Amino acid sequence: MWFFRAEGERGPERVSAPSEHSDDEVIVLDVRGLEPPEPMIRTFEVLATMPRGKTLVQLNVRVPRFLLPKLDEQGFVYEIREQSADLVRLFIHHKPD
Image 1 (tube, rainbow, N blue to C red):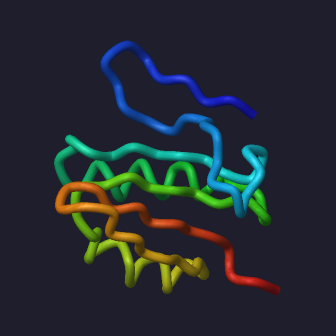
Image 2 (image 1 turned 180 degrees about the vertical axis):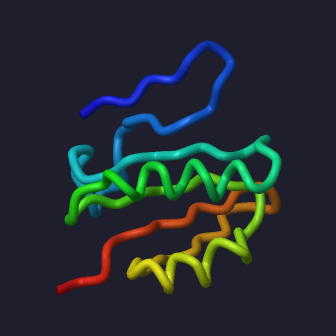
Image 3 (image 1 turned 135 degrees about the horizontal axis):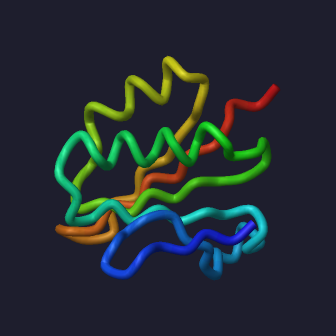
């Protein structure tokens, strides 16, 4: 499945994945520049249709503190990687069975 965005819109896209994942397993969602609650809304839109075994990588400018407890409630696990002062990668997966 491929995701495309309208001109000027940031949304999910398919990109080359880090070495621990094949690109068939990773969906990247860039929410940098969006105002709350839009990043959370877009994240849950993607997660609603994301098959088990896939990883959503959310690119953000900060750790999304309000999203994390909601991910726990919805049955997802995540890993936060703070890459720089203005780039945070949030790796989100379904909890293992």
